[in-house]
Length: 259
Image 1 (cartoon, helix red, strand yellow):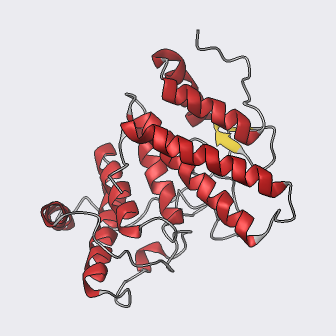
Image 2 (cartoon, one colour; image 1 turned 90 degrees about the vertical axis):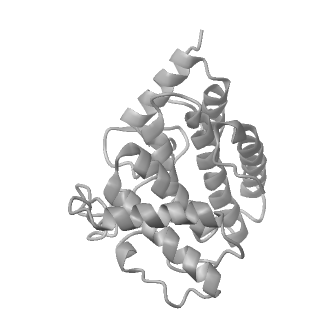
């Protein structure tokens, strides 16, 4: 499969997302409703949506933080998507935002996974950086490397250089819950927050709620996405909003106009 971490991959992800939405809607009306298979397809729908909205945002200036947050949120699903690819993309997008601690942790993990792929075993993988997060430990080992040797070498050089920098720490940022900021589950209380439909990050407060239960967005990210869509007239972003309307019951701003 070609590299789909690009703005021009939108249509492919959107088609997959729309197909999965139809499938999930049909399953919810059948005897398969709430079955393990249904839940699995719902998770795949979530993943396809994140990739689709990420591609849409990649084509727009000022949406870089949403792209980075989506890549970080996708790590939650690294038991389904290729883990080395997920950690590499999250690391690179965090690095481009200047979130160096996160970039260091994720690219370090990428290198560990790359080594595990070479050795054909996950036995030596150290999960200590991801304790108390919802990033899964139980993952499938990809059959082949996501990156060619020269690109892997570039990552190694950056990680090595950063590891000698006193400013960068090998820790993930915490939020007001005293929990890793992208984790849906609060470590002290076990309370699970809803994922933002724009970024996948937990919706804690200042939320936008949709008609369908279980769907919400962080208000700042939602407004940013709406405003960028209005300013740019991006057909991809407009299509994302149309999808969100179908998936989440209704957009909180049904009178929003692109004219």
